[in-house]
Image (cartoon, rainbow, N blue to C red; front, side):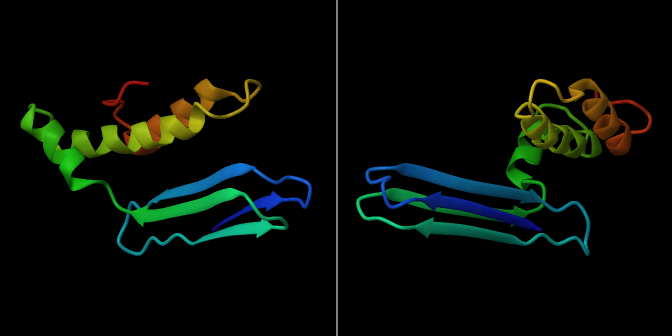
Length: 115
Protein backbone atom coordinates (compact mmCIF):
# COMPACT_ATOMS: atom_id res chain seq x y z
CA UNK A 1 0.00 0.00 0.00
CA UNK A 2 1.27 3.43 -0.96
CA UNK A 3 0.18 6.54 0.89
CA UNK A 4 1.59 9.79 -0.41
CA UNK A 5 1.15 13.38 0.66
CA UNK A 6 1.72 16.71 -0.99
CA UNK A 7 1.19 19.47 1.56
CA UNK A 8 1.08 23.05 0.30
CA UNK A 9 1.16 25.49 3.22
CA UNK A 10 -0.70 28.83 3.30
CA UNK A 11 2.37 30.89 2.38
CA UNK A 12 3.26 28.69 -0.64
CA UNK A 13 1.14 30.30 -3.37
CA UNK A 14 2.28 29.58 -6.94
CA UNK A 15 3.71 26.20 -5.93
CA UNK A 16 3.71 23.31 -8.37
CA UNK A 17 3.75 19.66 -7.31
CA UNK A 18 3.10 16.29 -8.89
CA UNK A 19 2.82 12.94 -7.15
CA UNK A 20 2.97 9.65 -9.02
CA UNK A 21 2.82 6.02 -7.98
CA UNK A 22 3.25 3.05 -10.32
CA UNK A 23 2.52 -0.50 -9.16
CA UNK A 24 3.47 -3.64 -11.06
CA UNK A 25 1.52 -6.77 -10.18
CA UNK A 26 3.32 -9.99 -11.04
CA UNK A 27 0.85 -12.74 -10.13
CA UNK A 28 -2.85 -13.55 -10.38
CA UNK A 29 -3.77 -12.74 -6.78
CA UNK A 30 -1.46 -9.75 -6.40
CA UNK A 31 -2.95 -6.37 -5.62
CA UNK A 32 -1.75 -2.88 -4.89
CA UNK A 33 -3.46 0.09 -3.33
CA UNK A 34 -2.58 3.75 -3.72
CA UNK A 35 -3.82 6.59 -1.57
CA UNK A 36 -2.48 9.85 -2.98
CA UNK A 37 -3.26 12.88 -0.81
CA UNK A 38 -3.16 16.55 -1.71
CA UNK A 39 -3.43 18.90 1.25
CA UNK A 40 -3.60 22.40 -0.19
CA UNK A 41 -3.99 25.38 2.15
CA UNK A 42 -3.77 28.22 -0.37
CA UNK A 43 -4.92 29.29 -3.83
CA UNK A 44 -2.96 29.74 -7.05
CA UNK A 45 -1.20 26.37 -7.03
CA UNK A 46 -0.78 23.64 -9.60
CA UNK A 47 -0.90 20.18 -8.01
CA UNK A 48 -1.88 16.80 -9.36
CA UNK A 49 -1.42 13.11 -8.78
CA UNK A 50 -1.45 9.88 -10.76
CA UNK A 51 -1.50 6.22 -9.89
CA UNK A 52 -1.38 3.04 -11.95
CA UNK A 53 -1.70 -0.63 -11.12
CA UNK A 54 -1.09 -3.25 -13.76
CA UNK A 55 0.81 -6.22 -15.02
CA UNK A 56 3.65 -6.34 -17.54
CA UNK A 57 2.81 -4.23 -20.60
CA UNK A 58 2.01 -6.62 -23.45
CA UNK A 59 3.14 -4.11 -26.10
CA UNK A 60 6.58 -3.83 -24.49
CA UNK A 61 6.76 -7.60 -24.28
CA UNK A 62 5.70 -7.96 -27.93
CA UNK A 63 8.36 -5.45 -29.00
CA UNK A 64 11.12 -7.48 -27.33
CA UNK A 65 9.74 -10.77 -28.65
CA UNK A 66 9.59 -9.36 -32.19
CA UNK A 67 13.34 -8.80 -31.90
CA UNK A 68 14.02 -12.39 -30.95
CA UNK A 69 13.85 -12.22 -27.16
CA UNK A 70 12.06 -15.30 -25.75
CA UNK A 71 8.77 -14.45 -23.93
CA UNK A 72 9.96 -15.42 -20.44
CA UNK A 73 13.18 -13.40 -20.84
CA UNK A 74 11.24 -10.42 -22.26
CA UNK A 75 9.02 -10.33 -19.18
CA UNK A 76 12.00 -10.58 -16.83
CA UNK A 77 13.77 -7.72 -18.62
CA UNK A 78 10.70 -5.49 -18.31
CA UNK A 79 10.31 -6.28 -14.60
CA UNK A 80 14.03 -5.80 -13.98
CA UNK A 81 13.82 -2.41 -15.73
CA UNK A 82 10.88 -1.42 -13.52
CA UNK A 83 12.85 -2.23 -10.37
CA UNK A 84 16.01 -0.55 -11.70
CA UNK A 85 14.09 2.70 -12.14
CA UNK A 86 13.20 2.56 -8.44
CA UNK A 87 16.68 1.48 -7.33
CA UNK A 88 18.30 4.30 -9.33
CA UNK A 89 16.35 6.86 -7.27
CA UNK A 90 17.56 5.58 -3.91
CA UNK A 91 19.88 7.73 -1.81
CA UNK A 92 23.58 7.42 -2.56
CA UNK A 93 24.25 5.57 0.69
CA UNK A 94 21.91 2.67 -0.25
CA UNK A 95 23.52 -0.63 -1.20
CA UNK A 96 22.33 -0.43 -4.80
CA UNK A 97 24.33 -3.39 -6.11
CA UNK A 98 23.02 -5.65 -3.34
CA UNK A 99 19.45 -4.66 -4.22
CA UNK A 100 20.00 -5.21 -7.94
CA UNK A 101 21.51 -8.60 -7.20
CA UNK A 102 18.57 -9.57 -4.97
CA UNK A 103 16.04 -8.53 -7.64
CA UNK A 104 18.02 -10.36 -10.32
CA UNK A 105 18.17 -13.52 -8.23
CA UNK A 106 14.45 -13.39 -7.42
CA UNK A 107 13.51 -12.88 -11.07
CA UNK A 108 15.91 -15.42 -12.44
CA UNK A 109 17.79 -17.82 -10.19
CA UNK A 110 19.60 -19.15 -13.30
CA UNK A 111 21.10 -15.65 -13.77
CA UNK A 112 19.89 -15.09 -17.36
CA UNK A 113 19.12 -11.40 -16.72
CA UNK A 114 22.31 -9.42 -16.24
CA UNK A 115 22.50 -6.54 -13.81
